[in-house]
Length: 299
Image (spheres, one colour):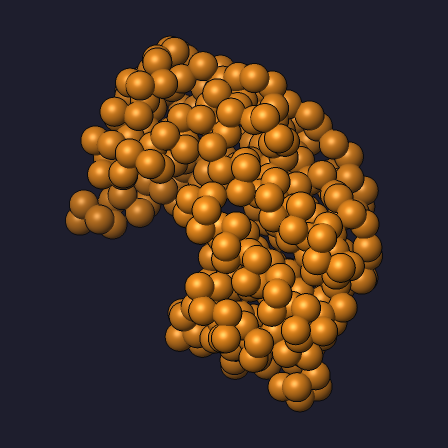
């Protein structure tokens, strides 16, 4: 299939989820059947060796998206990062380009939280979901749960010796990003349609549960301590991250505490036809990788 006949286009291909989706697509389809759109094509230039068409597309420059989306029967829009205003504008640019390109079906990665949530990015995703409904394009929304892969980051903010100090939280149906990516890839390859698919993990754990899975120092048990949201923000800022992102992370804890992420949904399990990976299965490998990276930096 030549460059003008790409059937599937994936945006954000050099990001975590986008890269995983591309990897899953390559497991089941030849690279020539799809293309990727990215701000920085050189970051994923290796995909060309696998037959994947690499196109430059920037959601802040709509004129680049016409070429990036051309020939797409199915388009995956990976939600962008940043504030809600920028996110909504960028997604609108993508939807307008998809309409101009005659895209047959749009897939969008959203979040579980709904209108009225305390999680700060929610409004931007809700607004994009409204835009999808008004676009006139056939679409499917993936409401993706919290990634297990993000746990080492949160543990890095709160784990001190045998104490895990984080804000109040609640049960969360943590889901492996690789499972999400496989589910998204399967839905797109099969051309499945559906307005909304809720993709969560197989069980809901809070950070007290997760603390029991952590290897404490000197064989001791890791204890879960609760700190205020403001204290957490201060600790995140001390790690070199800005106040805005620290506040987003803190609002995620309030969202979990409000029960907004507790639902365990069977949809992803049904699509994959196998059990989903659990926190207990995935987290040890993530922690090992994180520890190796720290040792490499310190060396």
